[in-house]
Each structure stands twice: as structure tokens, then as C-alpha cells.
Length: 299
Image (cartoon, rainbow, N blue to C red; front, side):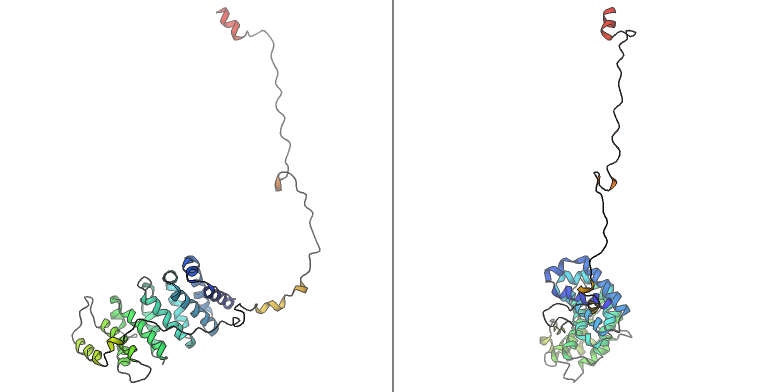
């Protein structure tokens, strides 16, 4: 049931335009709750986790409004559950990047959980495109001055991860990636007043001189290739559910019973009793009490 529901959510978000997704703020939060519950119960189901990842990716990249409406702590829980599926690494990297690059959505993702996800993916031997997105997401995270102490402390130790990338000779670590690494290191080596700490100047100068890396930095994310949803290859519609074979038109027969209902005035309550008769009135014609005109004349 969870699997079918998540697949339906992915279909709904995939088929909606940017304007449509941007206007459904409350439904988006409800969808995130469904994804969170599904990820908690079925985190080992790779297909379900991929559908969750695609849905979050579409929320984060469709528009600023949909990104803001889906930025919450439950989204972080879904991202953490998705991390165990290596097939979702490309979606996970760009989704986190979109949220962190938007200052209005950054707060729910400014924590050690998201930092751990980024570092874990960087150390999992990703492709160049995934690594580029992860480093750019990490750069956005280092902009938050309140997190810099946490980022440089175990178990995250972002400074060591960045230094390893900076000195790497692997072809995957391109000049663009190293340029963004330098930008992230500069943020980490800055105090709250944005002043460069002692000993960091020489290191940053040496880094910037290597091929003029600063000129090759980029804030653009590399968009992933989304695998076509199962059952959507043909006419663009989901296939019938597996239980559809159990119910066939020939098995459905007309009902053989009926109920006769007498409809009366007054609806379901019925007509009701007749209204009461008006009370009878008698006229007193005695002369015991003179009328007002006679009293006036006599006075």
C-alpha cells in the first residue's frame, strides 16, 4: 500500500506544472509526511526509496514556492533514509543542494544530519557530477557561520574532507570542483566577523594560484537523469494495480433485492399530525356591564 501511494505521489508531482505545484502548500506538507512514514517503514525497498527521492527532487527544483513549502524536518528524515540507496545519490546530492542554496529554506537543513549525509556521499566514490553537486551543497552549508565549529569537529570533520579533495589527483575531482572546495575552505577559515584566521592566508593564496581556480567556480547544479517510472514507458499512464486481475466485469452482477420506500410530504420525518383547530369564541350579550360609551355619558 505504501509503495503504491508513494508511486502515485510521484506521478502527481511529475505531471503537475510549476504553477500547480507552487500553489499546493498544505498538500505538499501532507505528502512529505507520507514520504517520511513510507521511508521509515520501507527504507530497504530500493524502488520505493527512488520514488521518494524523485518526489523530493521535484519539490526542491520546481519553484521557490514548492521548495519553501516542502522544507521541514521531516524532509531531512526522508533524505537520511534515502542515503542508504546508492542509486539515489545523484538525486540526493542535487536535492540537498537546492534546499541549502535557498536562504529561505536553509534553516531545517542546517544541522549535523545533513552535513553527515553530504560527507558520507563524498566518501562513497561518487561520479564527477554527483561530487560537483555535493561540494557545492557543502559550500552553501559553510556559509552559515553558526555551523562552522560543528563542521570542523568530529565526526563530520569537513575541513579534512575538503583538504583531501583539494590535494587529490583523481580525474573525477575537476578544476570546477576544486574551485568550489577553495570557496568552502575560505568560509570555514573565517570567523564570525568574516576575518581570515591566522595561518589560513598562505594556504588560500597557494590554492588560488593553482590554475586560477577562482575563475572556474560555479554555482550551477548538474541535473540528474531521472529513471522513467515503472508502468510509464508506454502511453504515459500508470499500469493498473496488481489486484485488478482479481476483479473482473463478468464477476459483477446486478443486485437482486430492492426496497420500496413511500415518500410522504415532509421528507424523512413524514407528514406529521394535522394542525390543531382554533379555539371557539363566545360573545357575551348581557347588560350587566355597560359599554364605555354609556359610562362616559353618565359621567
